[in-house]
Image 1 (cartoon, rainbow, N blue to C red):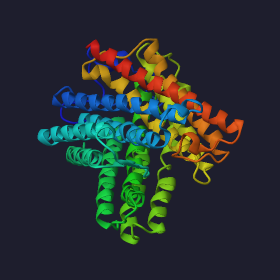
Image 2: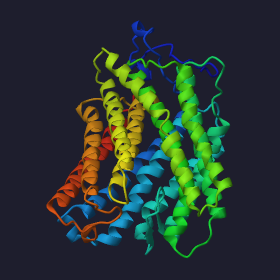
Image 3: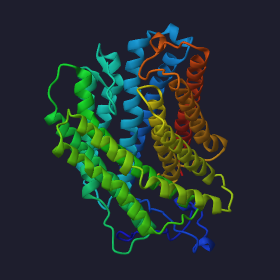
Image 4: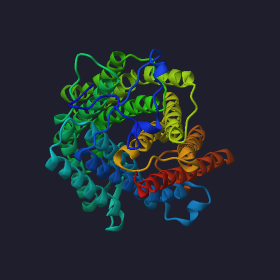
Length: 481
């Protein structure tokens, strides 16, 4: 889709162009569609850079806590740590920084670049509120005692500093989503690859708006029970499920965009791609139905959210994934130094998300297979977003990542996370419970210890991969284009 004077394909491929490092092969014009977006060179760029900085700082903070988290679960090492409370506090902050803050920050980057116009005060307020909120969550463990509550989707430290930070972050997210909806690109009657991607980003913003509405509805309707775990579980259940639709849509946009950027032409028409995005969006509207049909504390309310995500959430993923795989198999040109990190991020993202989806089929009971499932899916989204960061860095005014470090970083992170979830699946087969550590795990056999040992090794490798991502991006930022 064209907006203003911008065009889907840049008019020149000079040194300042994103696409100068990822040439499009016109000879393949009949074999597929180019899903490419123009990156604007105006005030949106500076604000997009701010969102990227917030995401990077969140990953750094999450990496510190994840190192402590993995050590708390690794047999032998965990004996030296104050395991139970220490593990849970680290887990809360790690999850909220690496999932909630990182995903919202990258969504902010993409929505800012894709928006037709800017409500600058609103967007600046969104960045400031999200940054202040993330800082509050990061520092909360050192500000006094607070009870860790392992609620699904958004675990919390039940204390004023953390909850205040989470509230500020939520207000910032509301401002961001309001801006994204107000500035959403219009989709014309003739849809091209860019128009389909714009629709996917718009659909992600709508899903995020539904999620925010669900959080407010849960807060308004949830009985004020004495048990903190029950209260926060009810508070975040509906909105947490709705957010997964937003993250999945961003990942699908990332897959199509990354494939096009490395010269792989996806055998999907723009209209079919738009239809698949619409299918992924449609299921999120089961969320208001759940609130209207059942009390928030009822089993039926929880089940409707779960089934909407299981059935509706996967309708678009398999067709897009198969189309991208087919495009990659048809692609003949070898990756150059700029394309190689994008190629690695795309493949590792699809591998991890597929692994998480397969594991989800075999979940039975409450054991560590559950975190194995969502680690695979979440890391699949994270790797797609990492690939988009590599793709966008030169267009945001920095140098394109290249070299062995950039090429291998997605694989180090992806393989580490794959080992991590393999260890969890292995241990889950023996009934090792989730959200516990150390002696609480009650590892009875050598096989259980070995499984959690593989988990620990993979986790450490994934931490290295995450730190390498920050290092690669930092090195690119040091060498502005």
